[in-house]
Image (spheres, rainbow, N blue to C red):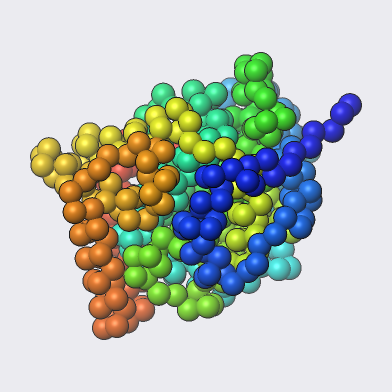
Length: 399
């Protein structure tokens, strides 16, 4: 069988060169201090055609023998309580939990704590960077979004997708949440299974998936790019909004997402430890991604429209102002070319909200203690999550 290969096909394309020479990519290069190159591309490119094999085995051996809900309930019990030695389960399920419950030698709980606190202390800004920069900017990478398109996940609507992302992010970034059987650990294992199930469904029902062009569905290289979105891009957005981090806090954020992604099935040695490694990986990965297409625009428009229809707010003028905040934030955080490719709307005085936030953040960090910022940020993020969960009323991915 011929092995799939890929080259950095967009390395000379205008969208790639503009991002890394003149856009946010150039800012990230200055921050990281790394001199990017295409060394190691072939090694990383192999991940484009690889996926989470153990997760796939669990779907084949476990989910095929139960209804989806019954399998989920059993898995949830194992997540919270572990598997007893005498439990009759497929080998793949036992391997999954042996892997997940084993604490790797490289894991540093002090760094995990610093990373979680860095995510929490930035409060509302963290959710803005996540939504208006990492998530919205991710829609510009056309192939990254194709599993959403082909599996019909778009039919859920932006509100439900946003609630799921928020529920996942908030729970995995709480203090001590990633220890075995805790809430963040639970979300990581459940998310690993939904990725594997989506891949199973896609391969079963979608006959025209182009692996050579788009890689394996939910492939390992795309997963490292997703980790970059939650760490590298996320931190860059927060910095643009005036938030400051110590070198140890930055390392903590990368360490946290390395461990989360490891539990999601990505090999640890393929995940970045710091901003330099993350930037190099992101540079290589973006060289294979085309810019936004019609599906990208649809996703971006749906996310923008979510705030206009958001039932959390009682009055339309409140929703209009929320929409103004999010559009302004995306305008401030995204490159101009990305903003235009996604066909996001223009708003009056778009810099007002972000620049006001930036000034406010600079003042707060000067006069409010870090511990108080963490407490305030945690309460705010948990309150916003509960508001979203109250209106979407969903069980995480069917669990």
